[in-house]
Image (cartoon, rainbow, N blue to C red; front, side, top):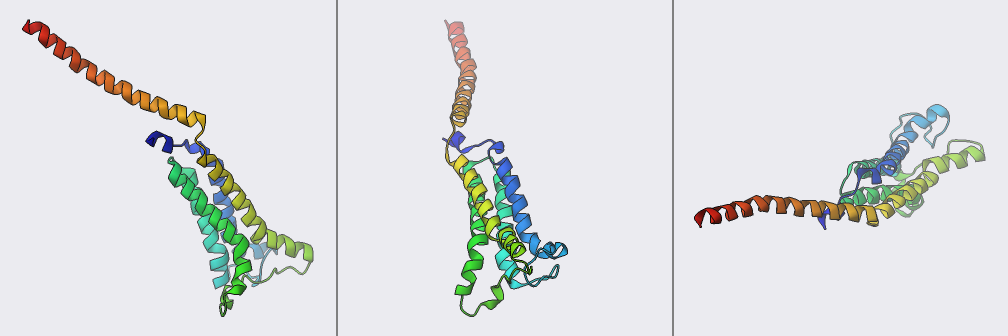
Length: 189
């Protein structure tokens, strides 16, 4: 059973790397986006606000850490924890900006507004900062969780081989002791 909990690290490698990159994007774009005229208000680089912390940096860090766990883990439960953490961070990118107006008296968590004056760029900013970013993150994390939730035939065969290898080792260790016992009985007779 314990062997089935192990998964090849390659199972979550691509998803983990992509999730880490998207998490870093989500956490850093509010600070570096103004250099490229791609920003939310306040549209000055490296301006720190509570809204940026709770709506962009925290979920970005959660996604990046989840991707790192997914990338590095060789155990199915911990890899699934990483995928779940990344999915939660991605979901927060989507629903966080929608929910913050529901918190009475907490205007400091506002994400601001798209800084662009053209509608097309404002929509691109909304997609790249929150909605589209979160959807891609949730999609990748869900795919990784799906791959981890299923015990592949290859995983079961490897687990059986590992169990068979341990049984063969135990038999080979027991065999010399048995031969020694036979040798001592033959000397005694």
